[in-house]
Length: 633
Image (cartoon, rainbow, N blue to C red):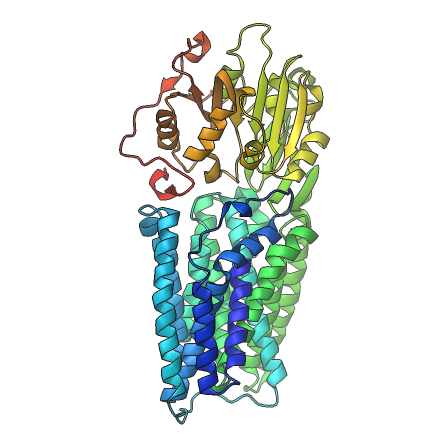
């Protein structure tokens, strides 16, 4: 998202600068750049882009995107303001409705990709098709530029104000409204996908609401009515404050619905005010450049500054506070033409309300990190550690949270301190796997995903456990807040970095058991469950070794993915679903799949596993193809 916003800014700035040149020069320069960008096609990254370092991957991701899609997208992003400027120059009409059309196309692409494109085409075919379409676009765009360069400038229609002496103030307002809307979009997306529910495609809702406000506001100025949308914005701000106070007590469906509507209300206000401030078409490209600059400021704040500066999602509170200030300004601006005590009283009330609201947001932000043993945040999200229950109670435990998702538990009662619990208890699938070895047998184990380190509790003297963890904060908290790693008699070492990439650099045939327990929120990262990933896992097993995959989650049915992978490599896939009694102290609901060698005798303890039925109509996932939409529960 940050790359999108920064490249959009660069494209809009280029379009603005291009308008200072003669028409023929514009056409020549733009045609040269379009032709040059074709040399970078197709937009498919090579193997050299695999990361070799650990930690914050922000810079590498931006560099990868710049090297692959950067030049084509830079020129695509300049198209909307360029074509509007050329159209306005030739026809003499106000072209702002074309911006609504552009955003409508963006929203249609956003909504159709997961249901039409991704399920039916591999990423390689998508890249080739997109690159071919881009070549056609480049030819059409160059033709349009040459056509526009030969036309005579038309007389412009009236209808948009020419910028006056208050140019600086107007530009600052463009920046402010665009930056606040961008900040709220990204902050609400984080709020929904981490503190409410890690539902696949949930991020589509706030982005659609954001784009919809652009479409409505720029389609016609009549759609934005201050009498309607200023009160709606005020209601939206208080709705968000109420949600932040409620926290995890929120009903998921209510939180998603009202957050999306509230975001729509705030963005409708911000973008509606932008439309009220739009200039004469002669200043069109400059206007778009400042709007994109505001969006980039919001993206940089949320995407780069906040994760490295804050330990919680304070950017949400800051975005709401800024929106409240802008709302108070808009109310004062709307009432300045009216005389009398009532308009003045309303202005004073809104100003005081904004001040009280900002103060309340500060208290809410403080409460959001109160009561936790540890709160930390980095590129990979926010982690919190909290103790639940009375300290001396038998059922008291310590929990590691990533957003709202439980990523590890340890009982506080000394009797259970070294006992693996929750998804890893003895009755779970991984518990069956760990207890399937013969007495006195030493195991070499590999585990992708550390969490609180609960699986280390299965280690015995003489065992070796190699843990793969991408997030350095998880390693720090597992060692400082939990004792599993310190208590295990096994030899433990931790490899920091993406588990799959780390395994690729290591020798094979070394593990008796390889466990895949890596999660992003509540979902398994797709690149860890593809055909290529499983080929690597099986290559790292000793003869007769097992692979165990944790598929516990609320929203995805991963059984077809597991069965197809097992069938492709001639493995028997055993499913272990655990649904413990409500009063079970040690176990949570869990689902594990074990991949075992069908040529080896099956230990008795594993015979209770359910062999996954064939899913012959399901296409195996590869690094080049996956279809999340098809496995939604």
